[in-house]
Length: 281
Length: 281
Image 1 (cartoon, each protein chain N blue to C red):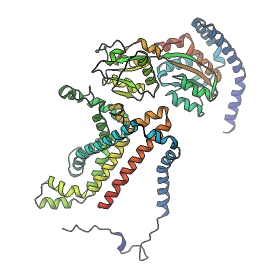
Image 2: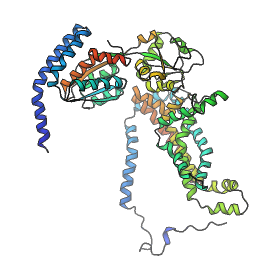
Image 3: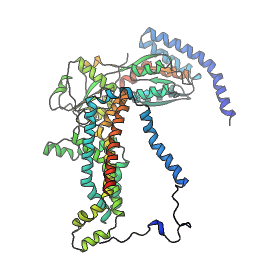
């Protein structure tokens, strides 16, 4: 089955540019703001590199606490992303493909953690899932499970702030995706779930991946909700951002060194993934 | 438009002549009473000064004060404005480190009240202080536990009981350093569930009943009201925080700055401070 040709492939439109082929130069009104934007994003990172304590860097990086914090950060951010995928993709599908009263409100609720200051998010999680929280007290009484001050608590806190990024990205991709494939699959006898699994999911895979990367990056840098909900204990709940913040209190040089490690690792992971996708597609 | 402010500064300069003289007189007076050491004369001096002083005091006095002084200094600011009509006390509360950085960076403040001698020395080392700092209050640690003290905690050693969730401040922040000192003094080896990023973070874990106890300042226990119970312990005396206060060179209202400092150190000032949990020297 060949997909219907999308309209609007630029080059050969009748009545296009007078000259036979389109100009390839970048228009100045786009180039200048783009460069300004790039400079704005890169400059603070460059400053971090310029002011980094390069001479004491090796000694900072060989301390076991740094690797402990880094490992915990990677484990927790990846787990939070996995958790977000498991519940976030179905949630995005629900928002994009079904019609129910109050959908606009639900969508607003989903994006709420983006607006909420993370520390407030952490307090909200304590009130909900803490030892004395409205749900947490039953978890404690029935299963003996307490989430605050545990690694599981870190993963939950990170999922809470990171999942909206995934849901919004996937929902946008679902809306942009052509529904006719799903409908064709269903008319050919596939159930709605099979159509989602075999047709929709492969179709929106790039969007899901982009959302997962956003969520992962957000989870990796998460500070406020984590320290409020899960506390700060080396090896158990002290992730890199927490270690950086506490180092900043009395040893700014160490804080910069730790930030550089976090940046280097995330750039390596993101660039690596990026290459894999572009090769795959 | 341009001449108005010029004239105003001119008028102020003319005014500062007699004010400076009276300020010097007041300074001598307060120096006398301070060296005599009894709070009675100090209070009497403050009392006798008020009727004569208002002539010289006007304008805004900007006070940078440690966050833990919020309740007491807000009250003292109101009293100061009442005693000296025409003056306005502008209070800026924050972490002592942040405030000190602001002052050395040129922030226009008249008075600095810090939560530790270390942060005060940041300002005095830069030559920004006008005169030598004096200690006006002391804060010490207390055990904050759940209302009614259900775990019957009576000593520092009780905190090591298995099953008890205790939070401390991280050693990189002042309350954590003090906690470490007190625990060492008592020979108590304690593993908390979390090292919090600041004293309010530690307190809130008890307020929200996620932790059973925390080591925080007496003023924090007092400010939390009936949400926590405070337990004094003898080792706290080994880790006392001195609160120094000083007038600043950056300020433009030296007379009012001195009068405010006098009020803080007067019998009235001490009363307000002890009411919020401080001890006074």
